[in-house]
Every structure is written in structure tokens, then in C-alpha cells.
Image (cartoon, rainbow, N blue to C red; front, side):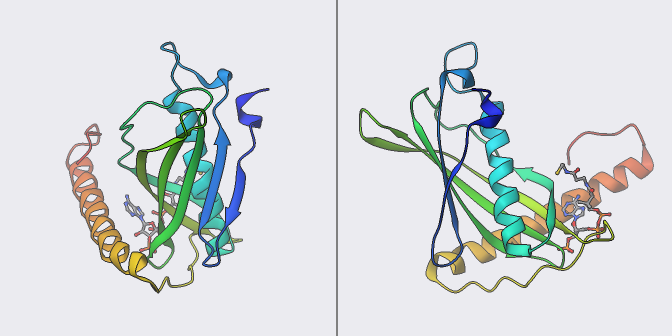
Length: 177
Ligand SMILES: CC(C)(COP(=O)(O)OP(=O)(O)OC[C@H]1O[C@@H](n2cnc3c(N)ncnc32)[C@H](O)[C@@H]1OP(=O)(O)O)[C@@H](O)C(=O)NCCC(=O)NCCS
């Protein structure tokens, strides 16, 4: 089976939070026999797309991805779960947080292998950013994540401004802020 065809199995809880699972198969390995980072990035992007599109009710695009750290390698045969939720909304953008858990089926153990934050922008029929429904945190976890996501959004916007100012001074300056 081509790895892009490996299906994500989806569960949605009562609050609309997504949990998607996929079995890591031998076609997904890198040269050291562990799951290839690019495979996980592709699944992360798909999960962020599904979560963002469901929330916004429109097509969404990925604007940025923060902090993808592979804390621990994932082995073939493990069952990987992506838990995704909207943490914060701006006017047209939203932060989708994704927590990745990997389960060794034969050892019956679960590890947290990484968390990442996607900024997705809702796109309207005119192909331009369009408003998203305002996210209002409604439980303890959401209330904890909300100000953290707000802080990350402010940091992203600040860094984007620094990059833009630097590019205006020197169009060849493409280094991250
Ligand atoms: C996403 C995209 C449509 C935004 O276009 P834009 O002209 O910057 O649009 P806007 O200025 O209206 O900004 C849209 C939102 O993105 C946010 N944004 C734009 N640039 C940003 C940056 N560098 N960092 C953080 N946020 C940014 C804005 O704050 C705004 O969010 P808000 O409405 O919640 O405040 C455009 O950058 C794009 O098409 N990027 C390519 C996306 C893509 O191809 N992704 C990969 C394939 S899916």
C-alpha cells in the first residue's frame, strides 16, 4: 500500500475534538528503520486541516507550524494517535494544537512523542481569508490552553513583523526571526 493511502481512523468527542489513529507500516521507515519524520509531518498537516476545516466550516490553508520536536522515535507496528483541538481563534486564523501519542501494541505501553501547533487560515469562496467563529474556552483544559495559545499568536505576529522589516531593509534576508 502507498503510504499516502494509509487511512486515518477518526473519533470525534462530544466537544468536537478530534482523535485520529493510524498504524505505522513498513513503507513508512527511514534509513534507520524508524518511522520517517516526513510521514508524521504529512499526517500532522492532514489532521490540522481536518480539525480546522470542521471548526471553520470553510476550506483552510496551513500558514505556519510551530515547534515540531520528535521527542522519541516511533517504531513500525506502533499505533499513533493524533489528538487535535482548536486552542485559539483570531479573526480569520486559528491555532490547532496536536498531541501525538504512540502505542506499542505488543508492550501495551503509550508514549507522548510530540506536540505541535498549526496556524490555519480560513479561506472563503473569493479565495481570501474569511472570518472564523470565535473560540470560547469552556472547560479547564481549554481555559489553560487559551492564554498560552494567545501568547504564541502574539509571538508569531511579532516575529513576522521583525522578518518583514528586515526584508524591507534587505530583500535577501530570509533568516528566521
Ligand atoms: C495564509 C494566507 C492566505 C494569508 O494571507 P495574508 O495576505 O497574510 O492574509 P491576511 O493578512 O488577511 O492574514 C490572514 C491571517 O493570517 C495571519 N497572519 C498572516 N501572516 C502571518 C504570519 N507571518 N504569522 C502569523 N500570522 C500571520 C493574520 O494575522 C490573519 O489572522 P487573523 O485574521 O486571525 O488576525 C497566505 O499567506 C497564503 O496563501 N499562504 C500560503 C498557504 C499555503 O499554501 N499553505 C500550504 C498549503 S495548504
